[in-house]
Image (tube, rainbow, N blue to C red):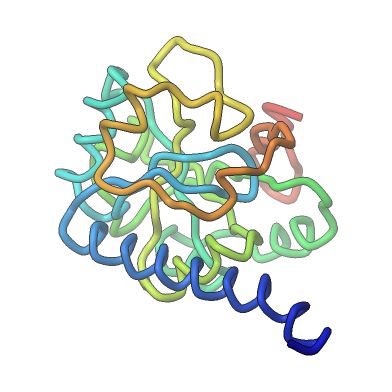
Length: 203
């Protein structure tokens, strides 16, 4: 076999594995199930962010009080405009200049599951730049929940290997992509944007 062919094998296999993972995820998400998947930060537990029933399954798995809101991932700025009321467009300029994945708390959530939205009507959303997530979000065409893959009160796992068997066994599909990545990941920055000013809640 030629050297070019050898070099292409890992690339082709990676593309195949990602596509298989995405197809499996889409099937589960469309049926109201929950997935365990890599994000642009830590591994997350995800579901259709517009489905209260699916969101309730994540709360139950994590043994987390349902008054604690969770982060939502979207593919781009257009999704922010669709799922929040009148966001400040200057915020998008700020986000384009950030180097760390940044979650923003927006006022006036629209069209998302009620049990995802905070009591004051706000919602935490992040535009995800990670390859796998962006493909999945674009194919699903709806926001996806992303909450850390741990039981409530337990440390956030930095790698797939650190995720408990209870979490791995409690979801409907575990993504294969990036399971062998041993580089510890960290949560995103968390900010609130009000009248052109940023408040950093988690650096």
